[in-house]
Each structure stands twice: as structure tokens, then as C-alpha cells.
Length: 104
Ligand SMILES: [Zn+2]
Image (cartoon, rainbow, N blue to C red; front, side, top):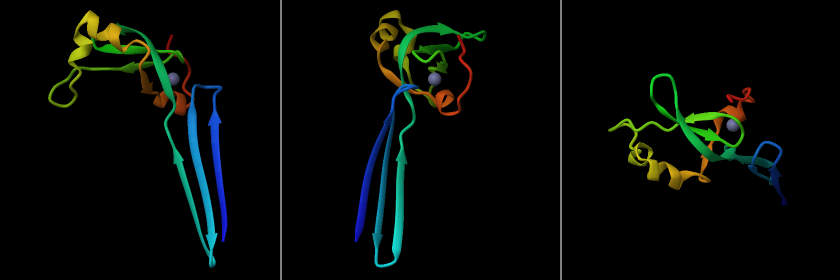
């Protein structure tokens, strides 16, 4: 039985963790790849044209952080203190995954 474990971390666009495992046994080949979305740090907040809060991410992209109950509950985004506490936290950035141009 062959067993290969590869762990790739790309850091040019933030952190991408990719676990790649390949197993070969008795003619049965299984490939398993787990890709974790690019995560970026929150560096600040502002509002879009419609007054919705969005996080400014380290990579230059915006990511909406709406408080829209009952769908999405983010009471913290409504207060100055709540937002300040989230600076430095990480969010997944789909725009990085899609290679979108920077928002700001
Ligand atoms: Zn991004």
C-alpha cells in the first residue's frame, strides 16, 4: 500500500491550507483533497451605499458583515466596541479565491 501525505501552505495571497492525501491499495485509488478558503484579517469597517456594514480585509477586499436577523445575527457589528473587538479576526475571503480585483 502506497500512502502519500502532502501538506501545502501558500502564503502569497494570505493563507491557504491544502491537505492532499493519496492512498493506493489493492487497485483502489482514493484521492482526498481538502481546501480551506483563503482567510484574511479584518483591518476595519465601513458602510456600503445602502448602509450595510462591511469589513475591510487585509487583502483589499470588502466582505459584508450584515446584522440581518433571523438569517444572520451579528449584534456586535452594530456597536463601535463590537466592531473594534473584531479587528484582527479572520474571515474567509471568497473574492481572493476567485482572484477578484481589490475593492479599495
Ligand atoms: Zn480577499
